[in-house]
Amino acid sequence: MHPDLEKMIALQNLDLEVRRLTEEMAELPKRVASRAADHDKARKQLATINDDLAKEETLRRRQELDIKDHRQKAARLRKQMDVVTTTAQAAALEHEISFAETEIGRLEDAELESMERTEQLEAAKTTSEETAQNLAQAHAAESSRAKEILERDRASLAEVNAKRNELRPTIGEDALAIYDRVAKSRGTALSEGVDQRCSACQMMVRPQRWNDLRDRSNDELMLTCESCGRLLYWDPARDAPQKKPSRNESIAASIVRAL
Ligand SMILES: [Zn+2]
Image (cartoon, rainbow, N blue to C red; front, side, top):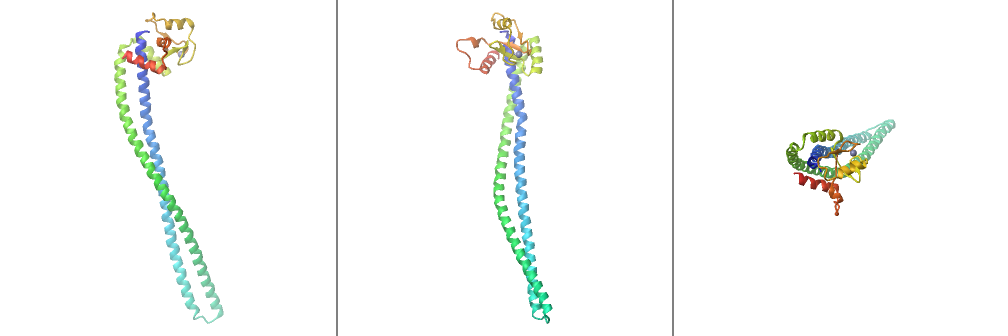
């Protein structure tokens, strides 16, 4: 294999790690924000329940005052009954007393209904408080988790970038130019040839090219995939009696060799 290829395999892995870390770091605040939104929603729900509870209490206070008024009025009217002189006056008073009593009954029923609503709201409040508390904890946990990962990622990123900066100048200028150009347009610049195919774009590699790629004496040759333009490499360990378990592991081994 061309010595630059081995270094570029390592470089590609470092570049992919930079990308992974950068994406992870960008994702962290979004997750925290999502937990914060959940917590906020629960807090608002709890605030609405508390408002409704306060409204019911205000309603009942007013109902009680109204009941008191009607009772006082009924009592006053009953006293007047003692001094009425005509049946018409008595009938009018009775009508008013009956109206006051009906109102008292209606208000008492309404007060009971309000108390039932309060009971339901109190139950909802308990649940809502628990939910808000759990979500507050989840939010706090996500925040501190994000902070830890962010610190770890920043350190890793610095480390990977340092390795990258060390590795890049050791690669031939032309090879590096191809690497940068293809990586920019394709995301990755290198592709392993496996079973006569480019493993990145899955296109067949022509037999002559495939033979050239596998020719171990061809250390000065650098081949590109005719379809996607990525630099092709071939890992001889794949043909060894003990096949390598995965492509990633073989890349990892290449990095160790290159660094
Ligand atoms: Zn390809």
